[in-house]
Image (cartoon, rainbow, N blue to C red; front, top):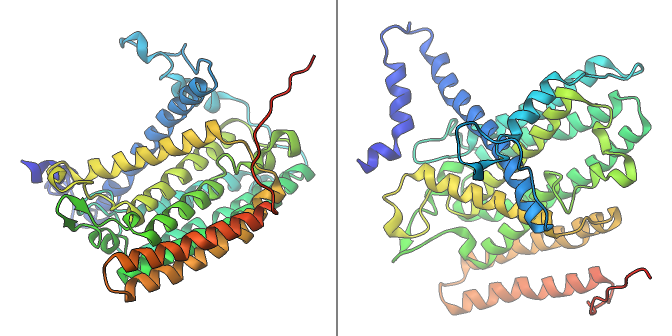
Length: 400
């Protein structure tokens, strides 16, 4: 019964493919559709729910109510507000689409499409459970980043095609941020690839599937793995334009960034792509550092593998929401300095720490040496980035 629950979606797919009504020539196409369409529906629904949960959570953090009027019919009143994403979707579909007169209309139309398609391509190499990887390729991690690299092009398309200087400035700033943080994002994954010896996302998860007693062999439970995970998540927030790195849409500075001239459903596609990108990088973080679909304790392995993957994914999404509600936005100079003067050196040092971990014999000495190799540069780089300034007691002043 446990194996049936674990492989329920695989069994359903093979059951549908086994229907005699399908001609043999259509079965490969149907197999692809049965892998792609459910993923698109699941993550589209997760996008809607995440928007409501985020608005409610930030409302609680800021001591106010979130959405609490649009409820679901025939449900408990406590679910009031969870129909908000349905209302927002209807509004986006029916809202007027305004295109500037001087805009390049073809490129203006293609920009949101070019942003969302690569995000969905990245989902194809993530292992959602045991035997549940849509495309198991030897270079899965490389494909993920290659597909995601197309987002910079779509951002520039949106800013340039609008024929608005503020849109173009917003696009330039967004591209500068995305390129700057893409470097430490990719470098932080090299340690995992080095230790596993493969770019396959499936093999990376399988390398973390063993247990010592009840404890798993996840990469995050090593000094280089913990440092890589923290660097990866910080860079992922910047890549996803999430707070405190949401400079491309700093309303007080460049009037909502590169998509200022978008409205209606096109704007909704940009909004959707931001969340789908956040889900994608969170899924890759789960795969690289948190054991993928493996259970956190050995005795919990009887639960379906796909359940563990999505539980970890939801935990990381909650982390994104928490950070957005509590950390203030950075200035542009702070953002760029942090990427090149702290994130990049720490990511490179982490590679050396991982190599040292591989060659040193197991024991306390290996933990001590590798931990010191990361802690000392962290302190020195942090002090250098602060410019010798130390944190002081915060004082509050009120207007009289």
